[in-house]
Length: 288
Image (tube, rainbow, N blue to C red; front, side, top):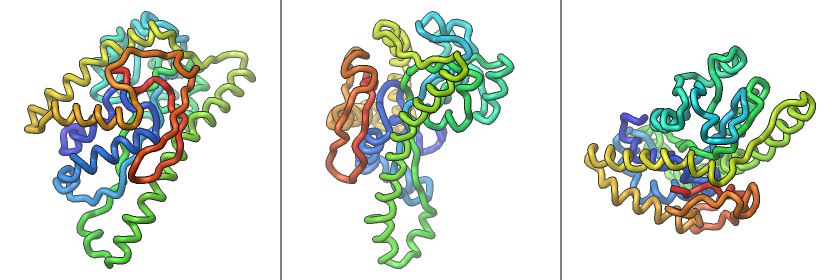
């Protein structure tokens, strides 16, 4: 979808921005309401709501505690925008489908997998890559859609039911599921590591986290350039995205303060508009 009208909404996947599923969904919902309606018209679909995954982490066969530990590691990056970031980290960006990664990690043809913590547990990457570094970026934007022609043919009462009850309920459930998946995954992995006597969840020191963040700044600049190239007001869109982040208590353009609030900080998840669950928000978002 990078090469479609959906590109505009990929602002929500910029590195080290959105810190969690619930608050991320609120940010993207407001952004789409202000700037994204034309996207769905061009794609011929009805937007039924926005969701965001929990933040991505690194699953690796060897511990990644420092920036220099990434040198030469064959890394399955999170997506197209992350390939140059992986390269700037000194890693070797390696294309890989999620279903192929377990075997690749087991055989050593892949050194690290960049994936959502909650979703990765289902793939059991931690069994063959037992070192989990909380890089906490990106989050991936998810869209609930319906065929526009089909939606327009629905009776008025069903349209109202979808828009006022069913869609919000589904999005709340998704946000709750992603938020709950993180502590559940941590508990499951910790128990496995203890039983096997090998494995660790690694929180980067602030100075090391800053080294990972620095090369990612180029992705924000590249997004603006690409948006402008496509005839979009890149600078204005990014400025408003940052304003919405700030409105939702996500720091923007501030240095990382990894120790603030402990390993996992707490956000209250409050915002106007659509109701989402309260969220335990890691203090790693909005660091660009």
